[in-house]
Image (cartoon, rainbow, N blue to C red; front, side, top):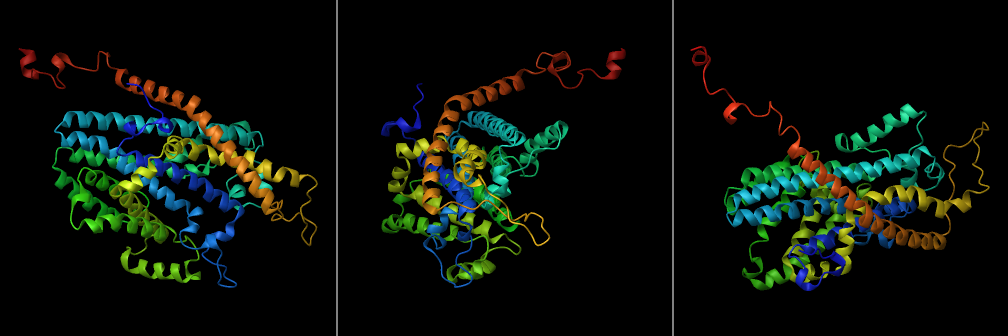
Length: 456
């Protein structure tokens, strides 16, 4: 069967779940935008200016989603649970349990490889740039996120190798990667995909109604055990995948189901706007903070819970609306969805290198840091930002360049990563298969005859 690229799909090739690809692409783009805001517009973090109590347009609900990176990561999680569960559930509903288990096993193995190998390659490339001093300028600029996520070169070759291993392993063990900070989310994506695999492995032979009930119980368990980043979003996505096989729009009253999706999406975006800090500085966020004391468990990370709850409302609203699904299945958005993971991986190192040089290199020439009273260099003396007009022009140029690089990565690197995953899968199926110790006589794990019978 010919593979149709997402950007060139005709309506006949649009899958029922294509809207998830479009929404994922939007989420990836907004994650990049949030990091740009954390670099050049940190005043958007609180919902207002504390000194005056007033707020700019992009500090207010809906508009501040441009800086709410955690809300878009929550959408990644919900879509992960939704998409990964669809095909196994479809096969299970047809009674093809063996095929469902095979699809579940193969899909789980391949998805891990296509997550781990590209991430490790990107960490290596970022490590290489760091050791050659490419990130040094970013450590001196007046851009918070760029400065905070730019590591310095290692002191020796041995330390550099240790730091590389720590960066690659730390992504999956601790959610910490000094060379590519956005990879913190990969650990949670990995864990979320394991949730899907283990849950469906246990429930594939059950009825759809039992599965939904079991997933609701798991959702409640995640909610009460403070798993607001992964659990509630993954299980919500799985519940939506199960619900997608029902014709919910045919339920009465039909008028309600025509209005409900837009209400859910609007409320979801409003809740996702909840700031991670300084929520007491605006009336709308203070109200949400007060409500959180009632609806969320004690000691919950309120911003994570609101991001997850809002993401779930958004995805559910889109799933219930044919119009919204059709919009998100636009070829342009499908193309953006097809490059969403490389976009997430690549943007950090490119921002700390290419973007920094485009913005700050001209201003770094002749720059002299200020001195403290004792004559030493002020450690907080940074190369200042350029004018808003210059910054805007540079950002537009950089985003175009970023999309070009990501497209090239998708075209040339992703196939290599897929081939590497396939090779590893073949290796896992053949390694030790023909070993003399692998299977005992008669294919039995234990000897057929007892020790007494052997003696006689």
